[in-house]
Amino acid sequence: MAMDRYVITGKQRLEGTIRVSGAKNSSLPLLAATLLAEGSSALLEIPQLADITHMIEVLEHLGCKVVRQNEALLINAGALGSCDVDEGLMRRMRASNLILGPLLARYGRVKISRPGGCAIGSRPMDQHIKGLQQLGVKVKEKHGYIEAWTDKLLGADVYLDVPSVGATENIMMAAVLAKGITLIRNAAREPEIVDLQLFLNKMGAKVRGAGMDVLKIDGVESLHPTEHTVIPDRIEAGTHMIAAVMTEGDVLIKNVVPEHLEPVIAKLRQSGAIITLMDEAIRVQQRGRISGVDLKTMPYPGFPTDMHPQFMAMLSCAEGTSIITETIFENRFQHVDELRRMGAQITVEGRTAVIRGVETLEGAFVEATDLRAGAALFLAALAAEEATVLEKVDYIDRGYENLEEKYSHIGAKVVRV
Ligand code: UD1
Image (cartoon, rainbow, N blue to C red):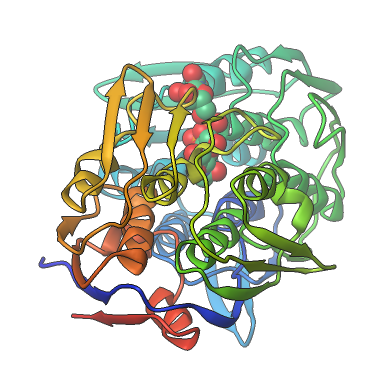
């Protein structure tokens, strides 16, 4: 299947208002969590993205009825037909592994194809599996499948070697229906974990501690369906902030939680951007060239790895030299070669990239290799001289809703062909 491409004419100053969609990385675990209760849950602000469509297909494959009704997505996880998900569905998206915890909690059985590796590096599941085993789950891995079953989930004291977002979510979703108390230590602290805790508690669960590094889950007998609005996507918001900076624009970004963007705001201010915080909006203004900054990706509340490629695009045309150190996904440098095609001067040594800022980037033929790499190239194209042809925008569709529409509205010249 041929993928679409963007043709972007750079150097257009962005000005106006842009609205951020609901968070993809919150929507995915929330969709999986609807499996925990019989009956129909309603989720609002679920974005229309390829990854979301895949997760909905997984839920439908398991027997859920999913319908969009006005602003809400209704998921009825009444009677499930199957606890197996085959390779074709699993391979398309790693986050489909988030059905492990909920299915074990509700049915005590699940079989999934091991999610494949992806462009940004090997992505192990050992912390998910270790945690579930501690709750009394038996796991067998064979022929690329993970089969897991349990007679009874029992609360346990789980320590994560790394604060994995997905492992924290999977273990939380299993523990809510386990007998007794579960502690998750060195848990991920991302805003998406807080959103999941809120949703689970609305369903009748007893979870405390989200946003801190120890979660305490008091297992309950059963959960009931509920209604919830997904938090805004902090990575989408951060991407728009950089777009404003790179085009020396003036953009009001609506539907954001400024606290979720602290590390991004701090780095942008350090490099000279003018940022005004409001209740649920952020205004970003930029005059003249920004200066280079160093940054290192870390688990939340550190600088998000999902913003690293976009920052690299920005720093490529900053004044002076910048250093980016990637500590979460060590192979996350796919965008470097493509940025070089646009005139960026970047060298990579191990997990560190040195970026020598150039006066301006130049339009070129480039290709998205993964979601955030695609976002980085999109941003680079907005700031580049003349036109850029950005191939394989389907990767960008995995995480950004109506991108060309949103950007055309604030003055970008973007055509999708
Ligand atoms: C989530 C996000 C993704 C983001 C990432 C890191 C979703 C759907 N995706 O992915 O956009 O880039 O967090 O912020 O929310 N690890 C292990 N063993 C495991 C699991 C993970 O060693 O069992 C390691 C990984 O290799 C990686 C680190 O932990 O180095 C973080 O990964 P993790 O937080 O699990 O990322 P995801 O939940 O997959």
